[in-house]
Amino acid sequence: MEFNDVLNRRHSCRAFAAQGVEQEKVDRILGAGRMAPTAVNKQPVHIWAVSRPETLEAIKGVTRSNYGAPLLLVVGCRPADAWVRCYDGKNGAEVDAAIVATYLMLAAKNEGLATLWVGSFAPAMLRAILPGAEVDGAATGGSRIV
Ligand SMILES: Cc1cc2nc3c(=O)[nH]c(=O)nc-3n(C[C@H](O)[C@H](O)[C@H](O)COP(=O)(O)O)c2cc1C
Image (cartoon, rainbow, N blue to C red; front, side):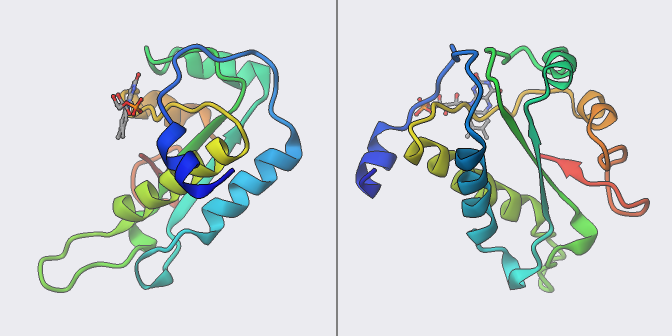
């Protein structure tokens, strides 16, 4: 798709078809996420690609913004791995994650897919479902879901 069309035609979808997303498309979307810049190239971002029906079902209880998407890309970050601005100590992990998520969303549009960014969810519940995301913060190796 022409880049300006990707930008201009993307909009939030709140009614998804149940049909699964082809693996080649998922791979290209995740590949786009890998190309996203991160501060000092620290790459503190993690993505969970969720399409297994039982996991999708479990995640339904985590947000009211559940519109039957057959694929969820959950973006998390590990603050301990991120760049920290020396002037004020601001941790760059969530900015990095937001950039990655934006790349994923636009890449999905480029594949002809509808998307919705969901920020309203219960983090603790989601962390309990996703492997490697059990805790908030890096002290015990977990990733923060953003
Ligand atoms: C950080 C962020 C969080 C959002 N969280 C939600 C959400 O939890 N539920 C929802 O239905 N839409 C959510 N949205 C979608 C916005 O409501 C939507 O992008 C905005 O109204 C503009 O509409 P558009 O995406 O169609 O251009 C979120 C968008 C952003 C950027």
